[in-house]
Image (cartoon, rainbow, N blue to C red; front, top):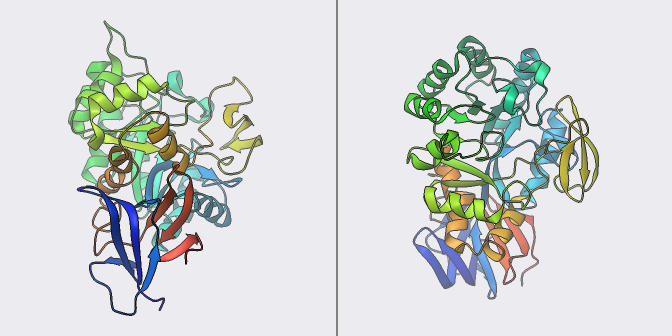
Length: 380
């Protein structure tokens, strides 16, 4: 077993606030509250130490996706781990039901092995009016029997399903998901304000990439955005890449939802961590240029090339959000939503030793997952 490590001197972001010159003890795979006399001391003065990131919504990275093989999925997982995401929910994209059932079986095995934290089905139960980068020919109404088929295929590893609640079967499917302990997320929807309120009352608790793929806020038709922002039961996903949201829109969401109800996500596709070029997203062709992914046919934004270390850096240096609020949005809030906050999401004794080390300029220098370096900062 590796010797106990004691990180000293960093600015440590804890649930209670930031501690200058703080100390974090890693013993084996967990964070500990005390260290033996022979512990290895690691001086990390001039750095920030934050908990590992938790991504609720991620389709791939490193040139691979969660719609491919097990090796593809592991490539994507490893890519995002190198950027600080130590807990990741694998997202699928719209496809025929048989393909999604097969993919659910493959991804559930990776979840059982601890490589991913579960599965998020984004589609096919979404609105053709707000389909974004999903194949319209493969969309379908959210029939509860078909939703249940995906849950069964996931063998208890389904964490979230994005659907349009205004479609036939939508509210019944929300209730089904809530009854099974699976997050019902409102997204890719053309719902009205009133329909969205109904969905929340039925058990929906997440807004899938708020503002994107839904009607804009209107002064006579407030739409889903208003309903999702105003309800304290809802966590709102935000893609903070400078492409999906204007900074003022991000600020509005933070102001109205509050830092405890925001989860930064990547919505990443294959190109994350891999550069520009031609890719696929499910059955669709995507062109990535200057880091922006768009469908070849139609030009819709097709996910992102974001990694969460970049989302962190942008949030604190461009958006000027308090570091503690950003850490909550990247770690504690999604961990709590997933029911994993007893194990991940904060730097507290007894939890997994998942941590990210940044320099003073918020450039990533090190990543540790369960006590082992993913990115070794070569300290000491």
